[in-house]
Image (cartoon, rainbow, N blue to C red; front, side, top):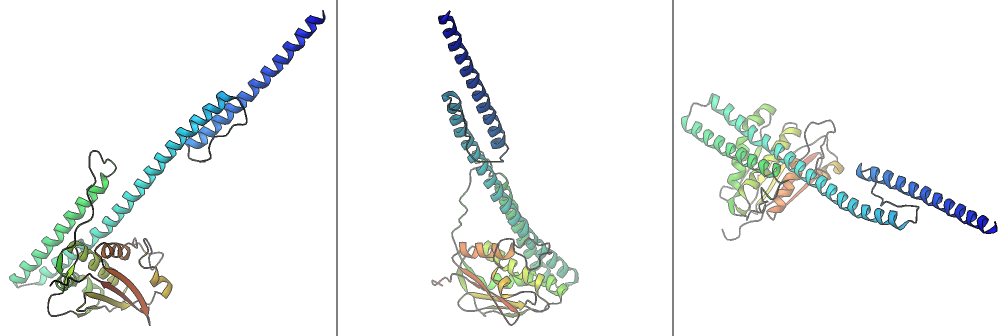
Length: 305
């Protein structure tokens, strides 16, 4: 009889232990399920932890943590790639407006122009700006397909600088904004050397730098713009900027910063100019003195010319 009682007690203890084990396992896998749902939804990046000491459940948790870490890395890479593509597309969309403005300006000039020689020159410049649009479209295609590097291999974005006459490039850019100046009532004061000034810079980059700076000046200047280029290939764009403070002037080259919070512009013009001039070995800086904003762009001069 005593033996039977002992056996019953042992069985009871075993049963209680089994029940406790099952309860702990159930709680552990419930924790596992809740953690997985939060991880998959991206609500947490904390590794899965279990209160149970069951080796099978803990091994399962370790495997899940490893796979979830890989999933999180892939998610971060995906979001980072999307961000870079979105920034690139935004930059290109901003730049597309500039050659379109130039094309419209030349078309306005052609309406009242009687001189066929000048008309031919305007058509040539329209053709040049149309080519710029085509190049931007190619860039947009490159960025839109960058998510599939196997199908569309990424090309090296660095283009060797070449020697160009920065004086002529600036002069042509100023002429392309003739209609925009006229519409805003701005008569720019221009001071350029009477001979070529050669610099080492990609021509497309130089054009985009000047176009962005002039378009921003037209947008924010009241009624005046001074443009000067010296012998050392330093171009200075100065215009009244009553809405600027020294603090906001220092932020002009920050991406997405705009002078007026309610402005519909993207605030990319100055930041793109800074990226391009840096890529070509030059510098850009701004200062605000007595309410006049000056943007100073220094190109890398070609000392061989």
